[in-house]
Length: 125
Image (cartoon, rainbow, N blue to C red; front, side, top):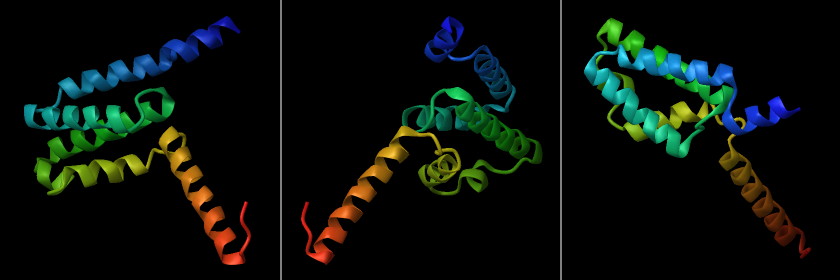
């Protein structure tokens, strides 16, 4: 029981190991790709998922994408497009299943839908 609680507070050992591997892989990228990944990572930390298994998968997918792009010498703009914010937002949408902000967005939409339905039927709460 205590180990589970400590894991919730500090993150699992496996998640920490995956994070260290991700950071090591990031350091191996050519400088321009590394700078790009670090910038995307910073954005994702603020607006996406910062920890846990879902986040670890997201960052692993991000580094996979940029390792392959660097190996293929794909220009960064071809990867992130002319609008990097849209790129990272679209990327993030693939990983938001457990994200708290999604639950709040859904809660807001449901509340508005209920309110509109009440207007349409003439019922007020």
